[in-house]
Image (tube, rainbow, N blue to C red; front, top):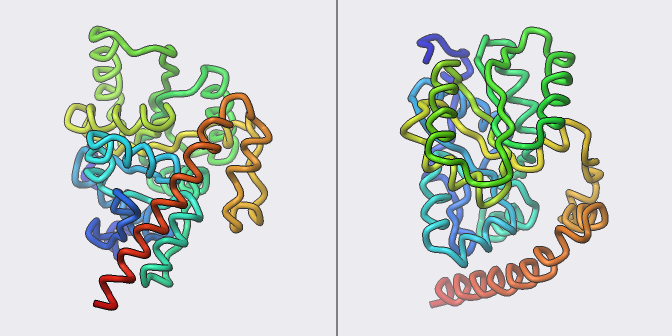
Amino acid sequence: MKNSRSSAAQSVTIDRADSVPIIDLDVNVVDLDRVIVSIAKLCSDGGAYVCLANVHMVMEAHDSPDFRRTVNSAALVVPDGMPLVWMQKLQGRPDATRVRGNDLMVGVLSWAAENGIALGFFGGRSSVIDRIRQRALRDFPRIRLDYTYSPPFRPLTDTEDEEVIRAIKAADIDVLFVGLGCPKQEIWMEQHRNSLGCVMIGVGAAFDFYAGSIRESPQWLGRLGLEWLYRLTLEPRRLWRRYITLNPRFIFSALKQLASKSSRIKL
């Protein structure tokens, strides 16, 4: 890893303790610029991973204590869903904002191109990875894309995993974008935190958004917390079960948490 980093790392970073509980996850209060500054600082510190949380992740963590521990052990848990931001605001954080995965990825690409930071992409289909590479080189001509790999849609064998670790370390990657989808990417990042020595960012569908293989939701729908509905119309067969079951459960659990907190304050 390099000793020289962007001067942005000297600015105010995000303290992991500056978070708000949302059901079972401790979600940081953030803004895009400070997330990028914090990632720059993490690059100087060694191996770490960053999770981008939404309703799906919150409920996966609610159902699995192991996954809950995985996400809460991240260096940063960034709210990538308006319902999480609303929960933060309702618990006394009017400064809470949303950071979308695609916005974060583009922001890190820009910062990395300006500062000679070595990047990698792990996950997604090979055609998606190819389009990401083409667009990134067009958008940021000075960018360093030193590692890309589209893994098979099955668990890697021990031998394959060792080959991936060797290749990433040989490329001396600073930031690795991981696009395996929740919860696979978060589990993978935690498992490899100590063996890769880079900052891993689980961005999920941002691979497809940046590559143009899936259209992004209009921003006004995102501000209303209805991005899930837009995605459901694009991929109904794959996503209907997730949204139909998880969204009502999230609303119930969130209201229960808020009611419990309100009753404690009154006491």
